[in-house]
Length: 139
Image 1 (cartoon, rainbow, N blue to C red):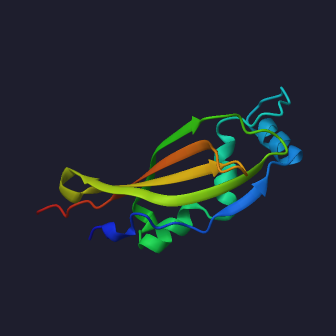
Image 2: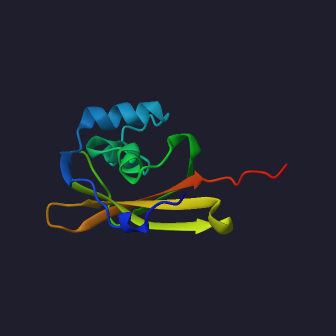
């Protein structure tokens, strides 16, 4: 049973947050970055995404069986640095759903946009989730 393509465009509510120095410092420590930079490391975007709604919330909305899910790919694209003290607006949506292997594998592309107060896009994150639908083997 495939994922209904009408879910393309489904979005979680937009949320806003400020990049706090202690949160960035804890993340840097967790990844072994002792530099103490005021600029967020690329993968810090995953922390921000989870603030307003995890990928699980989206997958639940789509009716996906989590036992069949794999995190297939993650991409980050920066247009300007995200720094301590920045206010960021975050929008998460289902950008695309497609299949391979005759429907045995479906892919959900979850896109997250990160915006400055001016509306300028400062970064984009694309997560690709694989949902397996193995065919029953003939005996």
